[in-house]
Image 1 (cartoon, rainbow, N blue to C red):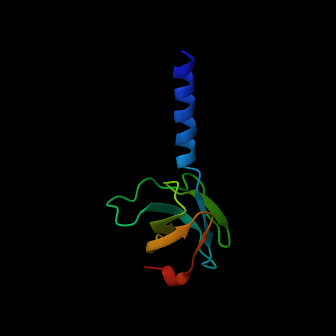
Image 2 (image 1 turned 135 degrees about the horizontal axis):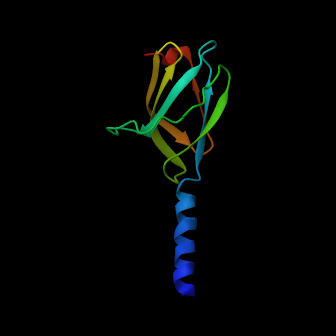
Length: 109
């Protein structure tokens, strides 16, 4: 029984470590609030779930997001929708654990 409990505990701890890495996203657009943020692996066919849920990201604000795998560097695609419905899309962004991605008006689609 103890071995089964220990195995379950090790599995749970390993699962937590997989989602431990993060990156920061900064809204550096000046005047536009972000209402939706999507993050996926580079070349994925699916953006995955919307990351802000019920929150918004005001101009100048930073938010921290989980990186889907425990890797030192990962290549991601990021899509953001602002208050006007405009989109900002970055493809193939290499992000280091704890790094920051700044979204500016130059990223506007």
